Amino acid sequence: MTTPLIMVLNGPNLNLLGQREPEIYGTGTLDELETLCAETAEGLGVGVEFRQSNLEGELISWVHEARGRAGGLIINPAAYSHTSIALMDALLTLDIPIIEVHLSNIHRREAFRQHSYISNAADGVICGLGFAGYRLALIALSDILEEDQ
Ligand code: DQA
Image 1 (cartoon, rainbow, N blue to C red):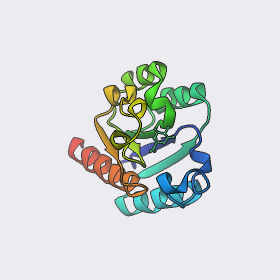
Image 2: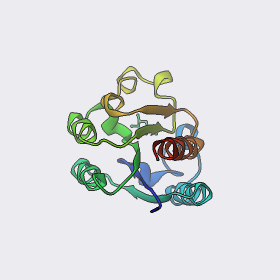
Image 3: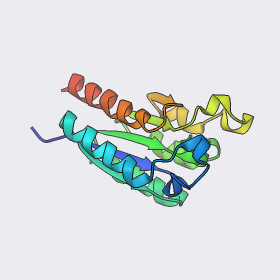
């Protein structure tokens, strides 16, 4: 049996985690978040690939790459959540479980952040729990993948 792969995709400006509005997004860096995901995945016995891009098209290409490769996908689309029908359409082509994660509670913020196109394509959404949201998403996906076996 091969180890299932979970892709973790991060959208624009998340490379600046730790420096960017720390009162909203916390002081942890993207590297620290990647380490947390790698350690969590190792404990769960799943593989993880962690990526970040500031480019919509690159994120879409990575979603295409997930087809046939990944068993599950976690995505924090950042501001593209609120704007990108193209990214939503790419995610809708996948037949693997998808969890959308936001560090902040987007429902407690500005009105323009309270709608996410990506939620139309997600099986689950976690927001407002900071880095723990990624850990919980990995646990949830690993449970789903185990049930599917
Ligand atoms: C975010 C919330 C988005 O509204 C924002 O544009 C981000 C980060 C979050 O993780 O809380 O860049 O996705």
